[in-house]
Amino acid sequence: MSSTIKHFSHPEHELILKENDVIEDTATCYVCNRTVIGKPTYTCTSRHAAADADDIGCKKFYLHQTCAELPPHLFQHSMHNQHTLTLELCFVRTYCNSCDLQIKFAYRCRPCNSGICVACAFPGPSVEEQRELHHQGHQEHTLVLQRQALFKCDACWVKAEDYSYVCKTCDFWIHKKCALSPPIIAEPAYHHHPVTLIFSIPDEHLYFTRWCNICDDYIPVHSWMYYCQKCTYFVHMKCATAPASALNETEADGSDNPDLIEFPLHSVRGSTK
Image (cartoon, rainbow, N blue to C red):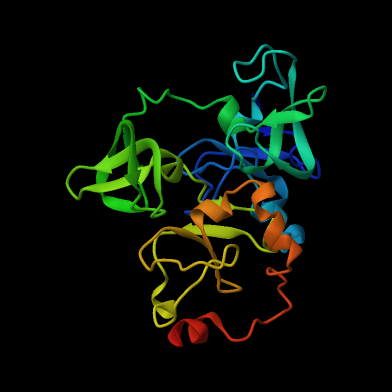
């Protein structure tokens, strides 16, 4: 493949292959939403031009070389073998029929009006093969995959049955789903800015009790969560990745209207209990 290509995910400009051009630790691929750090990645050619220096969308655009080379069609995929699946850009709010995460691109079946995300279409190593994981949320030690069990997760604090990644030194257990959660949700259905995965309440907010902006329940200080720094907006992991049906009630009561301030404030309400 040549070093410069045209791709339907970014029709405005050509893309150029850069192996050492990514500097943001949180940079993710536009198609699969996985990190691009340490992997051959296409960036927009206009990001290097002075005339387009203010084009934020182009500056933040990354596309794995492997994602650029994804097949346009899948025939008899194990998750949907009745019809051919076609890789498409989702112009309306779409959720993967496998993992329930909101997606920008999907392998879609038009007759069935369903689709799966790229990550589910190509999950990589099987559960048995993906034995070890180095995660930013627990940088001290390697996490090792364990068999499926019911346990309380040290990331989301929810008791659920799942495969687990475990630090045997620290007795640190997290759900496999939590371990593989995207570092950034670029276009969440419930907020007007991207939200970033963080691993505890930031120091500047430790003096106030924090509540999830979706379900309105308490967020433990040392749990993992999604966060918008611009709005001081916090969301549980399970709420941030919930399918659209789970958000209907919140949307109906207008609880995520960014132009409204709720009184009494959560911290005040919590202190009076």
